[in-house]
Length: 200
Image 1 (cartoon, one colour):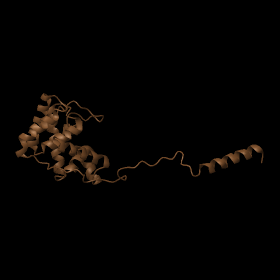
Image 2 (image 1 turned 135 degrees about the horizontal axis):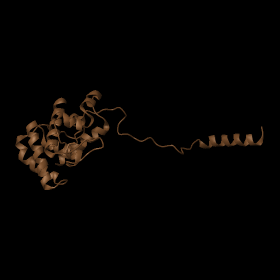
Image 3 (image 1 turned 60 degrees about the vertical axis):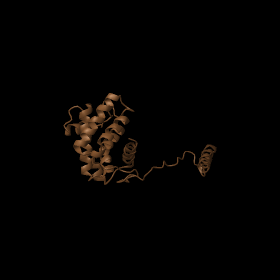
Image 4 (image 1 turned 180 degrees about the vertical axis):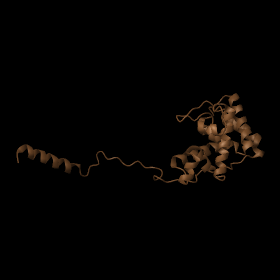
């Protein structure tokens, strides 16, 4: 064995044994809030009744309009709250729940557009808007109507389970059905909306 070969073998042995006991380059696994594949059917935030309450109609409009003014002009806030109240009563939906959903989706911006092409107040996808007979997704009144109708359909489909209906608004009802619940990311989305609901 010549000197060069001996030196290479010695260097190789030193590098192997020198690495023992060292965690150079090791990264602690990132903790996740839930194991992969876990689905949720409930959230830790109190869920409200999904239905319209005639007793709160006047109070809710004033409260919702006041909340929307944080994001939009007084004129737009009046239009948006009026549409939310009108269609919530028509379709028997809790107007504060609809307002909380819209707040989370677009911050009440009627011109909002997502990377997936969802549009307007309730961020309706073009296919959803078409199925709801919404011809202009950026029109405040039409979008509010579509958002309320869609939420009502989801609440009915999930037999009044508000958190599953909200989850289905994000993931799609077929996904929630197929998976028997919703993901951790969607759980956070549901809890965001229910937390906003408590603030309105």
